[in-house]
Length: 235
Ligand SMILES: Nc1ncnc2c1ncn2[C@@H]1O[C@H](COP(=O)(O)OP(=O)(O)O)[C@@H](O)[C@H]1O
Ligand SMILES: [Mg+2]
Image (cartoon, rainbow, N blue to C red; front, top):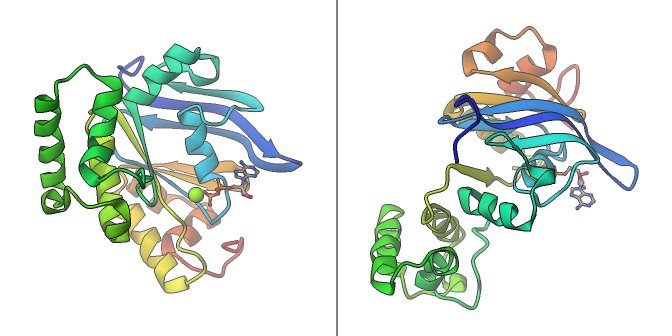
């Protein structure tokens, strides 16, 4: 999977999505560059998760388009959709492990499902990935025996075994605790090469850290500062 022109892995164009009269995405246009860390930020309930779900074809647009590596996701057939999901990993907050399988089988699952690798090859990959996330010793444990942080790392190891071109992390919101919120905003802002700021169903700003810091938009400035009160409010 290569991005069409090598520049953008994901292109979102005038994306509209509503649920029962609640217009969540109201014309979202943004691009995710290839080979970089992009972060979608915005207050709780702005549609960040809804946006990510469109990228892997778990939701369909009411209007507009989402292209991954130049291909329109809503127009993919069943087979192409499976191919897309092999190349795009999606990580949910709790790791989304299968509760009936131990850690080893959870991480081996995508390899058994999507490749013709032998059990010996699978073992090598699984153990290497578990080693990288510091879970080698926990290999026979069941998900309910792991802490939240361990489950998340396990989900990360599992998402990496197929060597995806694109990995999406859907992080939970930190809620209303202003200190935690402020801390999370700063961390996200610091790890992102490319930042997309979502508010009111639209992209209010996108660009590099430096570009956003220079932005004159009040919402951008307020969001970066992690202020809880301001001209637009955080809710
Ligand atoms: N499947 C769904 N059905 C109905 N409403 C939904 C669904 N998914 C999300 N929503 C609504 O869309 C809005 C945005 O949700 P979400 O994308 O989870 O926000 P965020 O991830 O930015 O916190 C919320 O009001 C939520 O209730
Ligand atoms: Mg969310």
